[in-house]
Image 1: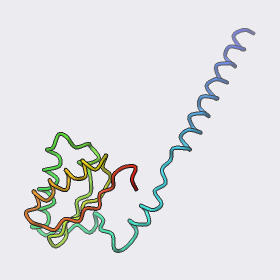
Image 2 (image 1 turned 90 degrees about the vertical axis):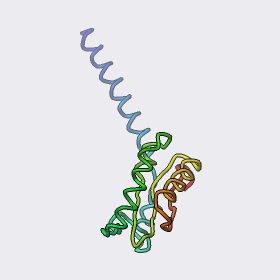
Image 3 (image 1 turned 135 degrees about the vertical axis):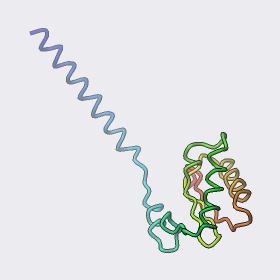
Image 4 (image 1 turned 180 degrees about the horizontal axis):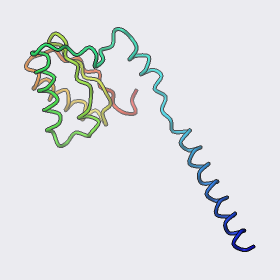
Length: 127
């Protein structure tokens, strides 16, 4: 009898904790509606717009290598989208802060060899 009460109590506690975790998870889901709408726009560059010309691929590769080599950048910053089309580079994705955004812009301009840079990076918490 005592064992059954203890088991019931443990199950009730686990259920309560599970429900609390699920409720907390529901509250923290991000609202990406505006970002999704922007990304669906035909005016927005996406990875599908990356050119396969050797010159554009070299620019993209040089920028990616510069970002990956920089030990101060966060993992999300190193994984931003770099889209090069006809010598024009678009940078997109989330970064931690304005300093990281400026660092990426500087690295991209240096690595791109004069290509035009369109910086569309989003500082987390500011969009």
